[in-house]
Image (tube, rainbow, N blue to C red):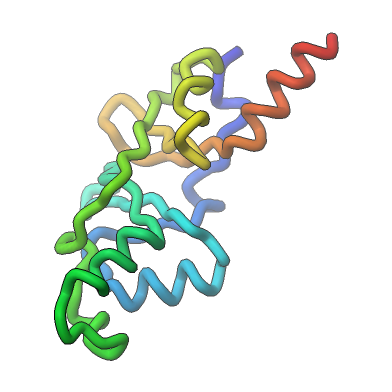
Length: 134
């Protein structure tokens, strides 16, 4: 089955531009209660995923960094420990199964690597549970 059926479109996804600050990321993630958020570059392409852990490691490994200082730290400057592998929109469900073992969501891109949305782990697992029950 094609994954487009399960796609949550970009307009309904919380994501962050690479050119935003660490403080903006912290506030948006806290507000939405997310532990990981896709990053988009200035051309709309998927650029990775930032996690709470990435932000915490940055604070730990930057001597003297205070919360007030986080508005001067750009997301581009933060090392990311995890890479959420994206899939193309014409992928099949089978392509996602190995990814959701280690990812809460799978970013979906078009042919030009433009971010078009995500598919959450929950929808993939529900699909396979229903398939098994049939």
